[in-house]
Image (cartoon, rainbow, N blue to C red; front, side, top):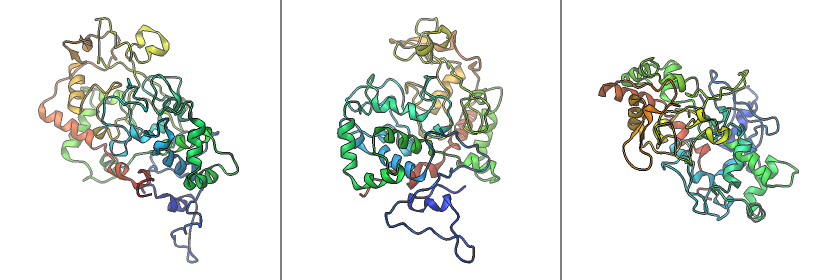
Length: 387
């Protein structure tokens, strides 16, 4: 698989560039320094393509504009926080904190999820079944007030004026939306395109399946067998090309939109979760939805700790221990309770026994889902560095 190319050369992916002999040649850099064309997905042949809204087709220029906006602190209400502040490339576009603080200091209540392959999710965020497109979801961190994240509300005019005073944005907005007056709507469309472009399918696991027997260690292979066994049940909720039961793509006839309770809490012995983090129940008010959250993808999971909807699970070993026990036991404090006895817990969370060597093998397999090229790809990195 060819990793995504820097923007100036990405046009080679969008059209055939050949010399007189028919051999491929590098595209020339246009005088403006930017190019455009249809977006070509950086996915292997066996991976399905994401669904793209007809109202926001993917283009090279929109992805480039979205990348600049994603890393730009000028987009925030206080000029100090960017989308990348809570979604760092080295951590698979998550952040190594339980929850994140917004631009006004408001504490978050949910863990900032990895954005890896987010284009394949049929519902976005941890537990909101109504957010089904990135264009809608991005409005939450930009304009949401409970809590404030980016904090753009009330600052739209001044923020757009500052952005458009920069020649980089003058050029990119014109290329991405020719003849249109740049506004916040185009900011949202461009951010959605960049985030949708964050595909990762080149981990050791993928190379092993593609025919490289040396890509995975013997320990990781043993861990893969454990992961896919009925004994551990992991694969029931984390399966398929994106290692999650929650998926949709161009070839699906219907979206799979599960939400699951993994037995992390049981505050009252009847299944209660902390009042500010009740999961799907917050939207449905159905008692059986208490503590149900969307199962995340496990791609790049080894670099996206801490885990769970509230970032309360520190590392892979702790998470495996919780599943092995069949739910988390919190012995004291305001969240005391035995999650293994939660009446709303998913039926696959039944517990299992592991030897220390088997535990190490399972961790090795999860680490084999790390796509180092994705984590270090300069085409996804901060474009403002060195400017």
